[in-house]
Amino acid sequence: MWRLCLILVVFTALSAPALAIEPFKPTQYRTDRSHYAGPRYEGLAIQAYRSQSSAAYPFHELRAFYRDTRQFHPVGDQIMADLRALHAHVVAAQDQAARTEALAAYKHFVDQHLANLDVVLFARDKAATDKRLGDAQWFEWLHRGIAGGLMNTAGGRSTGDAYVVQTLGEESYVLRRHKADIMHSEPLRVGVKFYNIHTLRMGDGRVKRLYIDITLPMAYLINREGKAPKALDLTR
Image (tube, rainbow, N blue to C red; front, side):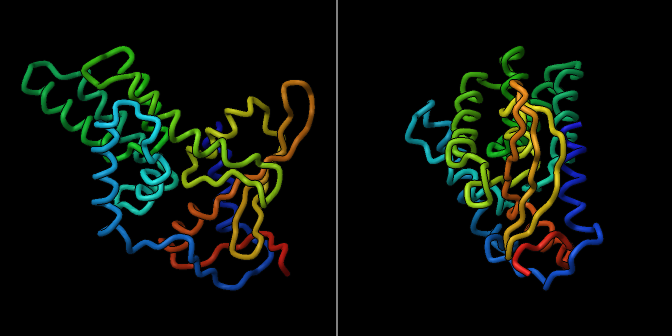
């Protein structure tokens, strides 16, 4: 339900009839950097395994280079479907050769998405019950590092203080952390920036608005679609 709500908000901004806007030419995101970002991401992934839970690890760099790799996608539903299928192959493997092949494929896929919170949380939970799938404590360290960079640099109180996400999974994570019911969600454009504004009812009954900057996933989708979205524009 969370994911369905978020997809509807984003794609409403892409397709719903609203205020017409000028073609958007994003400078925050470029799709031609995979030749550079791919090797940098791979190096940071190797470094993460060698860091042994070091507090000095550059989680922000891992996350930044990940979004410019070929395997990145801001929606991520296919990524999670592929991950679940690979895990199912591990569980279903009947002999040693099949298990070895399935485990190698699963671990390689996880390695390709170490900056994806949905993947990291899935891998952590599976590793907690099956040590063949990795070190659950290491995945929890990775989760805390990525989530810390996401949650601790904003408060979501305004467009200037919005949480900056690069996937719908991150947006869903931010909303889950607030432990509130979503009353209403709407897309917003301010110049070249795009936001989802969620009206939340908190556990104590208070109502608050939460601003989430979705410029990075929107820019990716725009570049892939080759056209600008239509959304509310406060700059007109």
